[in-house]
Image (cartoon, rainbow, N blue to C red; front, top):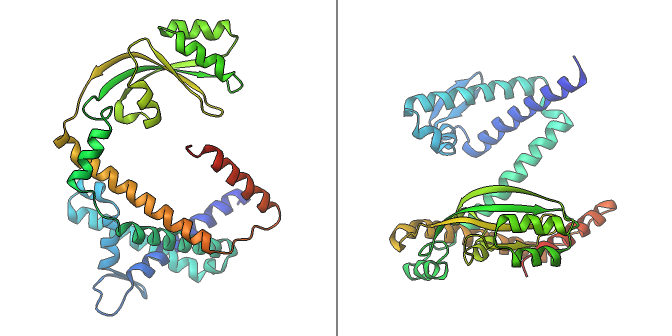
Length: 294
């Protein structure tokens, strides 16, 4: 057997062991937990089956309950068998498997902590939804469907020159002609996008344009000119938008709460990067500050 195949096989077994052990840790067995199936000396509980089903709502919705349950049960049986065989073969003692297990455990605990923090966030009130609706007419009351020409300019292009070309252009042809005259290389493509599919920073500027007008967006290494080819009004009333706004605002608050909690943890922690990792961490921090909104 070739080394690459051996490594791949070991990784698959390790992941199976990790999955089975993590499911066991989350669901537990014994006590008053109902047992769904016994596999040799191991057990799979009803709670474990339900936990997997809850993580696959779309598949369950398109599948009869009994069939979905049976499919998940057989998956867990295969995982348990693989885990048992792996442990019997000493796979759980392999350093690479130990690392995978520890990484999976750390990721699960961290994600659960984030979810616990996010659960404390309150849903937006009706007044807050109204204020958000009114503050973003480009997304709702004045929403449009756009056909845009996205022109990506070479990374080393002079931003002021490209911006001047975009400001005086009245069409896609004007943009391309101006860039050629300035000896700036570019690539273009057409985009059909609803307002909500555009990044908000782009939408805010595009929404103010008439067909044929352009705007230059300066982003390090990825500067773009967006030209409105066509736009069609497609407003959304407050009632229709309210559910989407509530979901968006709640998710935004959850993300902010998690970010704040993580910042507090970092501020209170003693973190010491060692050797070359200190330089890597410093460069990552500098890049993050450069990309942060002003």
